[in-house]
Length: 329
Image (cartoon, rainbow, N blue to C red; front, top):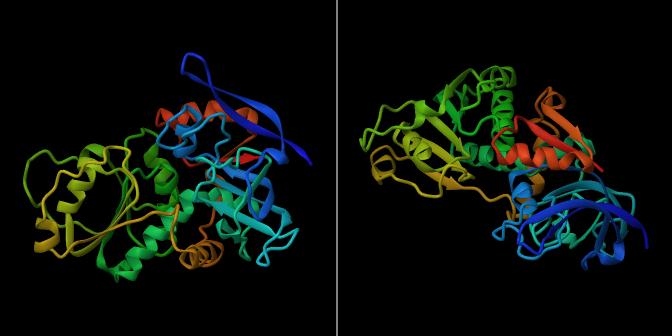
């Protein structure tokens, strides 16, 4: 069986974690109906956590992270897929407790695999990756609940991160007035270039007044942050405002009341791209390949090899990543 290179995280005797690039055999990979030769992956915050031994992401080490992978089928025992087909795998257990996309091969269950839709190249699919899929699911939920561009502003928190970047670009493509929130000095120019109409600081959405309600400003929101920022935005939603939430980088706590929901009819939806319905997942990938595909997505990426991953992992853990990091295998 083929040997291949993989980014390998190991636990040391002193309970610290280190990584190296090693040679592995496809015989070492877990069971699954589909063997995929990985061409591209991408770096997500969850990958960085796995790389430093976070047990909430990965229980057992040594391990190869990478929750995203795009490549070509090498072997298949599934009637759904044929050798040579281009495919995408994101989420499920990939890169968490199943050897992930930071290796040149993965073996996974067929139900995790989506055929690459027309209009999308393998590299482009990893510019989107889990971040783009999550953004698409968040936006689709807003649209399902009758949010339209004429109803008002849509605010996006964590706007320079992976999900935030993709959300800003897609919403701008769809004609929405996007307000991006960032704490990065370089974030304003970056977000305006993506299509945001306004950029505000984190402090502007960190209400400490204790008031149960604030002036209604936003018709929609995609929140990747949680905590008091989300609570502030909920108090600042217009009547019948719609909020999609998908992250908790500030806090999993939500210090709010029921007032936004019962006095202004605000709706809030949690989004999980890891285990979401397969048909919804396929629909979103088709949208990303066609009508939702922003122009200029090639301009927001940095491409690295396995050798460059360690540096980028340190950067994303410090909150310094802007845009998307694509890993070329």
